[in-house]
Image 1 (tube, rainbow, N blue to C red):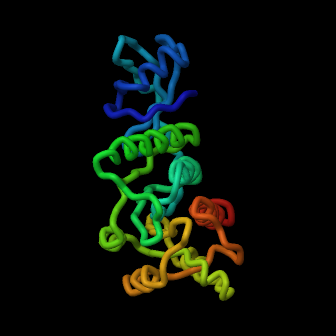
Image 2: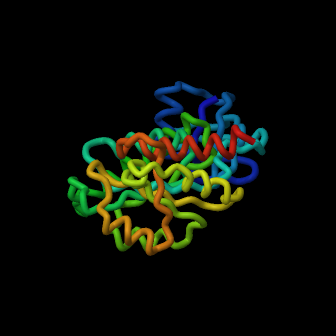
Image 3: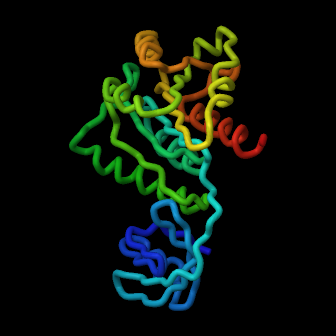
Length: 247
């Protein structure tokens, strides 16, 4: 069944508007009586379409689905603003792997310069990518995607998380291999993990030192040096294996 994230839903029915109406009527060519899955505020329901107009689709709830496909740990990926469409790739694949939030930030070695005037359209596109990936991977929620933060704003944003780690390639070169595993062993269901990953040129020593001063744990993601778009997928896969497959 096709899955849609809706803005309006009660215990008995859902109202679908916007681009999803076009998808239901023009792409999927659905009609009254067909079944869809509606997601709202982390809850999932099997619904039956009852009415279709030019700009609205109404559906009645048949049953609420209780099982959840969400990671038991809330993982926020903070990516140093990379070049090209690498962040779009991270958001798409990271959503499929269970990330709860994406926070780009302007790092000292970020080549891309963020333009506030033109940036809103990019943020909207990132949100759309997350929504489509959440539908495809049968998520119950769409991850939040924020506009890029400054490094100072990133530090402030990170304070509410249970554990905070920074991926640092120098740790991999030194052979560090236990910090990430130790953090995962200490995390409990419902807690949160904030992961900072640098841009193509990596984080500077000063940035890493400042993060450590703000209670971040510096760690490697294995003995190999990963690209900026690969590292988020590594840590999300590690979290999924530890909490969903190895228990």
